[in-house]
Image 1 (spheres, rainbow, N blue to C red):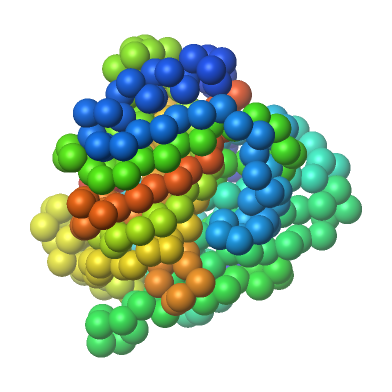
Image 2 (cartoon, rainbow, N blue to C red):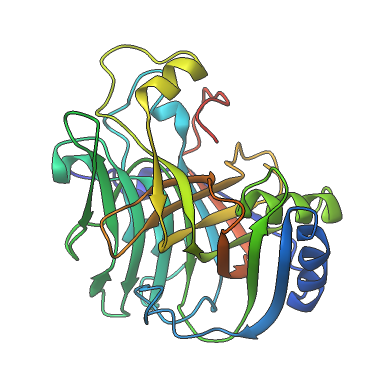
Length: 322
């Protein structure tokens, strides 16, 4: 099944507020102490993220950093819209206003269901060269027919489709300064990303700040879900949705990619969305760690310049955004 022609998709764009990284460092460091016992936030030169333990397709998080949101949960719930299949390469190129730039695209979305003939989770992680060559380190996770196990699969270079919804951080993959966030032992109720996001929201208020990047669950376990095959009946409530989803405790090390934004800025945005993959066969949609006493996180993030909204649903709702 072919993806939708990107040239016919509606694109909206808004600038994001970009505080200096040194300022964000101090804001995040102060805020996270209410949720974690040990907190260290630094501005550092981005390590080579292609190397272990992160295994990204590109080295850095700099160069025209942009947040993209594709589609949304209304294309999945209460009924799936099978036509919503997007090409990440052409969408990223249009968002960056160039078909000649090298770029890295990382993030969370519904996986390319035609590739495995089943609904699945997508962990998008691909680099596109200036000549159009694609290097994919993307993965997908799907549930087994008995709903007891998860199958994690590598997505080949030739498969660049994302279904239904996605939250993608796109940049030129260059080295440069980034925000490094390290936390140990969760003492509060919020997950790692929510703790960062709400700290920024409380400080910056109506000024919309967005970030994208990668974090590692270095120790402990996390509650994660993997969707079931598309439901033949409508999913109208959160209870019905949660019954359809499959939840697991998944073990470190988990490599999670995605985006966060402090408010919807009238674009019907999902405020946070991270999916993880691993080298040991586990992966899914990150919710929260389940081992707060021993959990350890290490994340690298950059601040987005713009948010690009692609194919915003005309009829929306707030289900399925956790």
